[in-house]
View 1 (tube, rainbow, N blue to C red):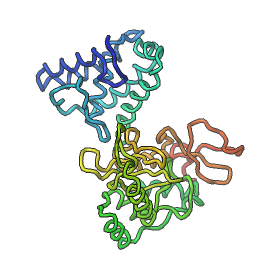
View 2: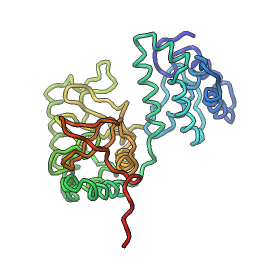
View 3: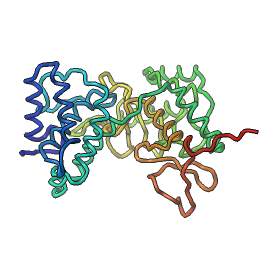
View 4: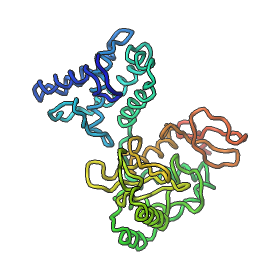
Length: 347
């Protein structure tokens, strides 16, 4: 099997699979994608490398139709549009990717013998991440869930959340930036105007106030103006900064930005580091999806970007990898969830 890179379509077997999709009737293509995924679930050990490659390509086609999924732009992908795929293929694709990465898998073994193995694993993890994004809830609902949890389990942390933003200040910021904020950011600011003091309340960077958003944006735009090269892509997927990025959260000069450029990625979340180019590959399809995932983490103990919430010995919040037991020599305890919190006792 000829292979030239780690992408889902960067090999002869995947290219042949996509050619077979192009040759099939429109009504038959979803079935071919499903078959490629199911075959790896039904296969005997060790998993055949060709079956695994076809399953990865099929999973990439499913991912491309999910919120936050990257469109298929490879020259070796299907030439013809893939019809809308059934929603149940998301869960099947996750199981198929897990099977490809697990032992015994011929494809995993072949990649493990190369220095590109970590990059191959990362490419599969990016696909899996998009497939497992939660269905977004209204932002006000997610913040209500977060507020309720913090009030009960980390009241000192909840007190750091600012009250709602002044609508007039929000409007003035939009006019100063020449940008209209996306609906989910407006709804978030209507719940909390950032935080009043730095704290690890969320798994990512702390949310900023309207004033903070405007100030950070103006600073980056001014730096861009002084250093034109920073806006050049120059071989990278993204520039250092773009004036259509809205920084909604920030820490130490690194910001989580909302991309307001026209196109299918409008509204997505990504990162803009102070010393690197921006990137969106491991971002979120929108702010509402991210806040839904945060609320789910508090309520159900699920991870957000590989981190789960903990409580410090002083009742503070900390996000880290599952299983961590201490922070700076002090004990960390798993944050209570709705599954582990006892029901209120009755008189």
